[in-house]
Length: 354
Image (cartoon, rainbow, N blue to C red; front, side, top):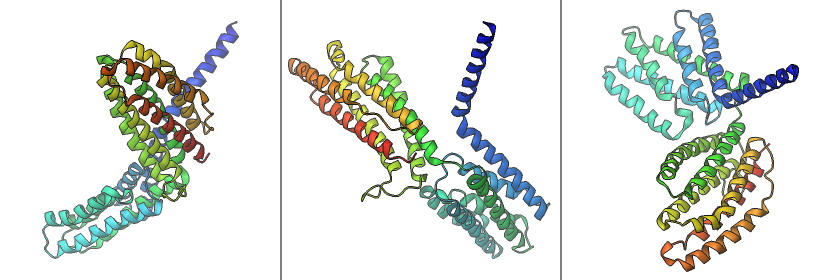
């Protein structure tokens, strides 16, 4: 008996440990990648010129941080973007030696690079690289551009090491992160849909908070989808990953419209009971889609969704006809739209690479 309890306890601990690792897998990889990049950059800088070890390490940390969870762009793109920033800093250093005020150089160097980085992830480190190189010129007055040129080499060394670690030694797989993120989104959408049918202040407050969190998760998923390298699925030029996130965004919008319709109508218990089977079918469908996304499976068919939708629509239409003041005319159409969006999501999930 004691042996059985001990075995169960060990199994429970192993399951908990595995769940903990899976929950923090991305953060652990991110931390390990940054730490290894910093150590390798320090060792490389020590071998090349021991007096300047901090700048390669700083560049490696910055690049590791930028490419941590949502890399964005290829490794070559990010390397070119960072070196471009260093080149701008070198040019600014040259102008500084010609008497151009430092505050004006900062504006001329940082502003255009910041503009580029706002829309291109490969340029995110460029403003910092420019500042690092420009600072070398400002600190080494009267010694020419030699320190600034060395600083460009430091920035390039740290960046190259960070990219080597993130792309070769500890690579990230955006499609896996996207699957986890979209699986989490299906759970959020399921909870949103359930809260939309509750007519109380607590539910409305929870719905508002969850909506904000879901929008943040959608933005993260959008960035991840852009980093997944896939060929366009059709003539629209959209990849399966981008289409998947776009459909989830449509579902989120449809649920928001359903919530507004229900809030404006002040639904009764009778109408909620009429829609309850469809609500359960939607939540079951979202759970199945989340499971398929998380574990690289194929979403199963859900014929019960159509059956429960037809029943809910007919009951809601009958209720709306008997209670014209309820203003539920748009609700059947919104529920049908949600069913169609869920079918599209199943097709998009099935098209993702395994």
